[in-house]
Structures are given as C-alpha cells and as structure tokens.
Image (cartoon, rainbow over all chains, first blue to last red; front, side, top):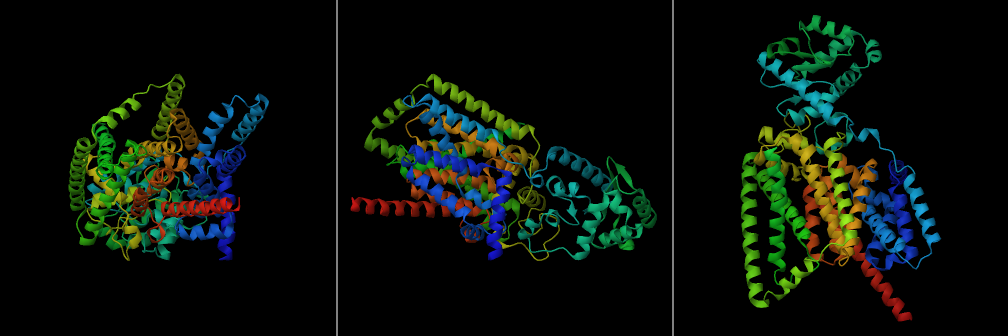
Length: 287
Length: 338
C-alpha cells in the first residue's frame, strides 16, 4: 500500500518529464477561474478540477491505479483527466473572448499573450524512446523480406510447419506479417506488460536462450562466451521445436562456423542475417 | 487501393446510416436540437462494436470457427441496419403525419446560413491542420506496438480460423490459456472481419487505415463536445477544433495522451477509449443526454481491459453526477443562507 502510494508520486514525476500538459492544464483552470469562464460550464470545470486533484493526491491516485487495473502503467491514470478538452475550452475562451474583448486594456492583453507564448515556447516534453519504434516501416519491411526468404528456403527443404528463433526486430513483426510462422518465444518475452494477456509462462531455459540471442549482435558480449555455450543454446532451442534459426550478420564469425561444423549446416546469408533451416529428421537427430 | 477506398467509404457510410437511424428510431417524435448527425455517426460506430461483441461472444461460447463468426457478424450488420432504417422511416412518416413539415423546413433554413469570412479562414486552417495530421500518420513511420496485441490477434484469428486457441504472441497452442477478461474483447474480431470483407492485409489496416479513420472519428467526437459548449456559435466550435488538432500534435510525446495514441497507436482500443469515447461521454454529460451514456460505457467494456467491466467512461459519469449533485446542494444552502 505505502509502496503503491510512493509509486504514484514517481508516476507523476515520470509523466511530467514526458509532457507539460498537466502544467498547461493548471494554467488553463486558473485562467478560467480568474476570468469567470468557469461559471458558464460549471459542471465541466469542477469535474476537471476534481479529477485533477484525485490524480495528484497520492492515496487517491493509488486507488485510481487499482481501479484502472494494474495491467496499465501508473501514469495512465492521467488519461482520466479531460486535459485536452479543458485546455481547448480555455484556449477558445482566451482567443475569442479575452483577446477579442475591446473593453480590455491593450497592455494587459499583451502581458497575458507574452506569458502564453513563453509557456508554449518551453519544452513540452520528451518522448520516451522505448514506447516508439522510430523506423517502424523500414523494420517491418526488412523483417518481411527476411521472413519471405526464410519461408522460401523452408519450402525447398520440405518444412510445412515453421518454428522460428530470431532476433527481436524480426520476431516482433513475424506474427503480424506472416501469421503462419510460429515463434520460439513472442513479444511477451521482452514486454513484461503483455504477460497479463496470457497464463502461459516461459521456462528458465527459454529465457536464457532469449538473453543469448539478445547479446548475439553484441560482439563484445559474445566474445566472452565460448562457442560451446552457443551450441548448447541452439541444442536447447531445437529441443523446444525450433526448425528455423536466424542470426544477425554481426554475430561473431566463430559462432556461425561452430554451428555449421557442429550441426552440419551451411548458413545462408540474406542481407544482414544468416538463416539456418533444419528439417524434421535433423531436428530429431540433433536435439 | 480500390479496396482501401471501399473500406473507407464503408467506415464512413455504415455507422452514419446505422446510428442516425437508431437515434431517429428512438427520438423520432422528440428529436431535439441537441442531437446531431455527428451523434448519429458515433452512436453507429458504437453499435457496430456492440454487434461485433455479440458475434465474438456467441462464436467463442459455441466454439465456432472465425469464418463462421464473420458470417454471423455480416448477418447482424445487415439485419441491424435494415431494422433500424425501417424503424426510422416509420418514425419519420408518423412524425410528418402528426406534426407536419414546418419544423423541418425551419431547421433547413437555419442550416443554410452562410459562412462569414472569419469562419472561412478558420475552416481552411482546420482543413490544412487535419491534412497535416493525416500526413503525419501516413508518411511518418514511428508506430508503437507497445502493450498491445490487436494486430497479432487479428492475424492469428484469420490465419488459424479459430478464436483464442492459439497464443497470438508465439503462434503455438495455448498451454494454460488466456484470461477470460482478455478473451471477451472484440476489436480483433471487428478488424478481422474488415480484413476479410475488403481483402486488406492486417498490417495495412492496423498501421495505415485505422489510425486515419480513428483520427477522423476523434474529430467528430470533439465536434460533439464543441457543440455542447457553444451550440450557437460556429466560430467558437471551429476554433475549438483547431486548438484540439494542435493539442493532438503537441501531446504526442506523452504515453497515454490522445496525441500519442493517435499518431503512434491509432489502431489500439486505448485510442478509441481516450480519443473518442471519453470526449463523447463528456459531450453527452454536458448536454444532459444521460440515457445515451450507456453507449460509451458499454463500448469501453467491449474494447478495453477494465476492472470488472467498468472503466473511465463509467467513472466520468459517476463523478460528474456527484459534482452536479454536490453543486446543487451547495447552491441550495447558499440560497438558504441569503
């Protein structure tokens, strides 16, 4: 409970780094209050104030967090406040009724306009990089090309059902663009929030395989491992049903050669990736 | 391209026809000025979601295939539209017979008011901004799959022809299963049906078409809110719409805010909740159309994972009513003292 209350405060800080909208909302509410604009639509004004207070005060914020269900990040409680409608309402009142008011002194208007411009000129927030895939289209296109090549190779090898193990950037689009391909593990491996959507859990071995694959592009991390460890991981994946393996071309050459020698397979280079296909017999024999 | 145009036309015309007929069928005799075509469009969209939920639940409960689920949804769409249009025509005929055409003519006259020069400029500015927002969605490629499984689920339903037997993240059979609260969410079914009817790829629907459509629907929802604030001033409403689009663009840095969701996750149910259902609820509350509030509250339950089926729309309604009741009591006491 106490921890939850403290986390509400942390969420508030996090939200304010990403966006200054709540600050602008506070200015909008103050402006409407001072200008008497709140009287016209009192219900909306007081509702916004109340929801704002409920989200700010840590104990009520924690209750709201429980209400919205814990699958969402704590900062999502701020979506309950009608931030955009209220700022929009205040902005229209400001533009058409405050600035447009001929009885008001010009100097007074200029001071207020300057204050608003200063607020708008300040940084309005910083995007958290983990939320957004900047080169989404490019990534998806690349993933589709690699998957097409993999499916073609698998078809030539007579594979009907494909279970793929590949780096994150391929796996995250695989189920959208090629739903016929099954994966060794999915997006819920690295996006913990998606665990709420399934009762299935990954084994420790599978998690270790994920860590190995994640570090595979990192040449320095790979060099610390022996090629035996890499082979063990691949054995483990084959046991888990994997029959298609994709490794980034930045992988240590040692690993690629060792797989080729240990598993009697020749890697196919496709753009920035090496592709290995294992037939059903090979999987049974090697695993 | 042809299919995209057909789908866009369907998404424009069907909810409009369905929702307007629904409102006319209900309020045919008592159509008040506070309800508009925009309300009809939003109500139609929500009814479509409701129909998708019905077919999703029936198919899930009876263990039908996904193609059977789509067939049921097609039948429901046709039957609902036919029934509501018939009821609306009946209601209109009775109304014309009883009340005559005077009121309608008067309303048409009101509608024919010309735009002033200021309104022309403002509407031009709004159009430019809207086009900029659409371009932002179509040209930029900074989408986010973060915390959302809708595209994966849609692809999985379509490829396996089964509902919730395959884990959407891996494509393997479920070992334990999925939580029941997750299994009742119907948006993937609706998207799957749209992909199947119009032969469109899931990735195109999710990352290209739906974000633009939902941006448009969000503008409609905010228009209803603007109409609730300024029923008589067109200029105020137009400026409000411009400010809203600017705020969408500004708020795209912040997780959970409407701008972020519209520009980076326009396909997700969260976007519909925050950019459409919440402003629509606020506009209904502002206009005291409490009976219609059931629509956004139920839509939220069908789309988004909420605790015990009650989400932000329900809480907004409850809190708003509490604020109103409290202000009445407070005003009564103040009056008594004076």
